[in-house]
Length: 300
Image 1 (tube, rainbow, N blue to C red):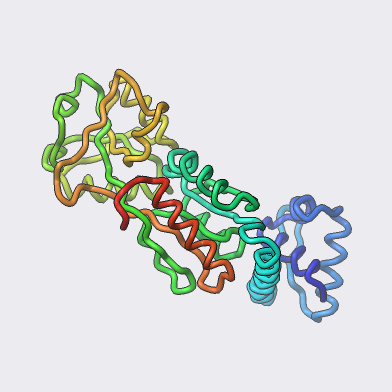
Image 2 (tube, rainbow, N blue to C red):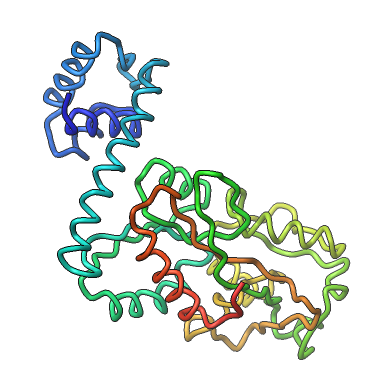
């Protein structure tokens, strides 16, 4: 068998469709289908169940795909090692980040990475945390910036910094008139939150329940920017992470960001996560240090 055949099989397993897998692999659908059949003949087993709507792996197919991912990851590690030895800092880095952090941290981080590693090709993926973890485990990412905790013995988790939460309130809201607030001030308040699937929603709900606050029923949104605009329109209050309240895009004359005076203040821990088997640990640790510098927040 060849590495190309394994790549075809892994992409087919990921996408569940011969046509889409062929497009990703840069071959025609008949070519990909033929190569998969040849692989099945070599191995003497059926790897996929074929039907008009989707392609489903057989049980032995699932086992072989899992091992094929490990093989392909190992090959990529070999390529990365050779590139680093040819030219320090060169090569490709695939970095994932979740949506409530990426738009605010990446504009600060990417220039630092470019200045420190001018030969590094940076590929960024912004997705929800669970999807990033799936891609990381499957070898589709080299590392991901995530809100902790992350518990997986196959992954190295490095805490980076603490990001405080601030209350975002319309300027005419009673809490907006205060310089600082206490968590006790949120008792009885109703907050606008993100939709299911966002780690920030889970964190905010946990804090709300602890403080005696609650979620506004019948309202959920997909982005922090929508939340910000709804607050500015006087629709309610919400919690925003510190980095989302900084910079020119966050400013406005219709809302205020009020910090908490409690010690410790409500916050989330941001960390970098990569596979323990990664051959790029040295580079990833340097990227982690640059991330702490870019955020400008207390180290975790």
